[in-house]
Length: 385
Image (cartoon, rainbow, N blue to C red; front, side, top):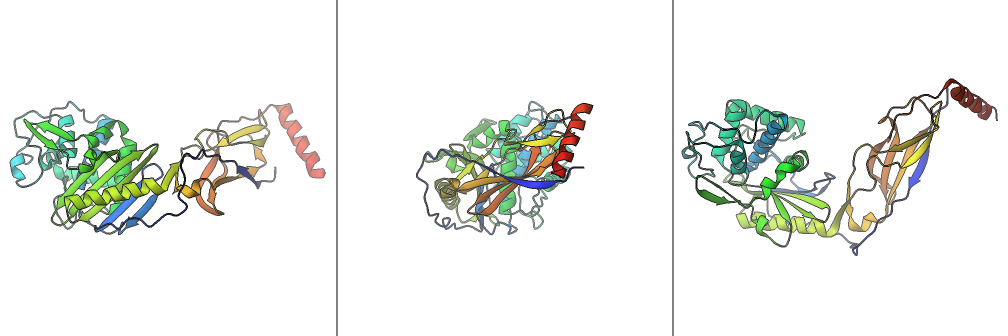
């Protein structure tokens, strides 16, 4: 048996910096809201936050989860976009006076696709109830599905009791959970994400505009996500924007006006893009090194990472990012693709900022009899010397 020990390697990371990186990062802008979060959509890094775990009423931000469930059901094949939905008396628009609605009526045809747009663009409470009943049979049953997905996504501070966001003491969430939900929407259902950028939608001869006013702001590329407002929740806005290859998500909850939530979101996004950058330092499946393997068909094993990794840093730190990995010495075949053979560390100024498994990039079978005997003899001679 070969004695196993760890060996340390360094990786050279070369960045082509096309901007003058600011050496100083000022504090995040002051935000007049109950809570906020600024997150990078790819790395999941929280760049700035305040009261992010405080339990708050989500208002119509709830409909982000309603939409997430719709997309999940579509992906699983349980429903189709062209399904005709039966609008019940409970889902009738007249039941929601003074609130956002799509203006659906019992007896009129409406499709899943139309309801989905009515939920996101028009923020229709009536549309939320109709789709809930179509998917789960009743809104109460649909809420159970919503909470199930919340658990799967790790939204530990969230609990729903309705599909639309009407106030209830047991209906709550946190800014960090909403940011995670937005990230899941963007990454889990990228082909459906375009709906969040729609500026208006017409149904029943009534055209309504999206309440996310940042969609009209030409100073940044905002393409989602959702607004919310009740007297209890205040004014809420989840926004996402992209600059070059970096996407940020901002969550503002409990602002005092529609304009305040818009300006707060804009300030957060602008600050994040100005001072931070998200990079992909190594590619998944790319060979970072070859390790010596004994008793195999070949004696070299390509190693790297299995999944994409993204790192968000102040721009001034990107050029000083270093990578090292610790790998097992004395590996023996057989080895399976994906088998962990070490750890990859990313460091800034000597401090670890991220750690990921180093894995075999391919299977490596045992060698033939004579090859294995030769390796055994080589090891014996080395041990004697």
